[in-house]
Image 1: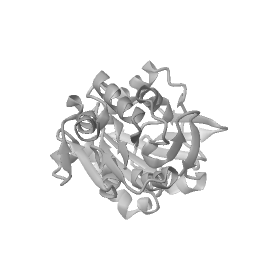
Image 2 (image 1 turned 90 degrees about the vertical axis):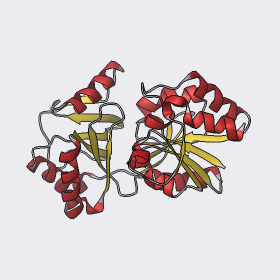
Image 3 (image 1 turned 180 degrees about the horizontal axis):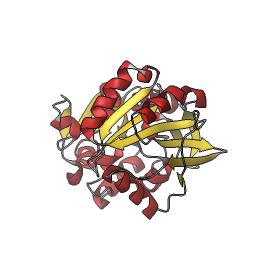
Image 4 (image 1 turned 180 degrees about the vertical axis):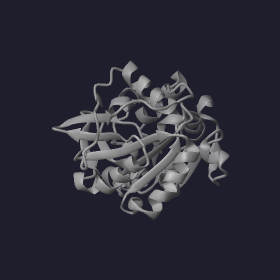
Length: 273
């Protein structure tokens, strides 16, 4: 059985860190032949240190399924990206509503995060956290072209939950039909993220690819938020932390201890070691 865990709100504690207990337990599981990896909304830049801490050797799922990486040299094994012309209607939709898209894309082989400014606390929290890590992807731009980027990973809006719920509904009825739309509350800022990405860029689709790559028959999943749903629903077994957004919303998955109580590691220690 392959075991796949989300990071934020699931494997990481409320400070966004791995505890020594989680690191020691998962490393022991892997050392004894267990199959363990992660599926996260994070990029390779923000997930790399956790991958190394845990000693993960299997491919990892990043950016909600936009990428599957080989962790040894962080080679991209699989990707789902958007082309420039696909974004015209989406950009027009956002700009017409005075929203400020954050563009995650690849330009001349370099990863970029383009934005025009900081307009709310959720954005401030995100960019401050990235600047503290000296994230060189960040780039302020003056405005947006009709086709703002090629090899686009995602277009992200960070704003108030009620506001983005309405935007999400309008997208569903309009230009969002041909894309994957992720809308979820950020674990740390409590602001909502709405992300547009390739229709195949989901954790569930990436898990199916990972099953083929690892030649596993089944996987068990751990997750806490809306962007984990298809991964959880397609798993042989699925678990959510008792303090998760999915638990609070009443989703009927088996619950484990909270992320601040090492829920995933405790499950592995109790059942697999």
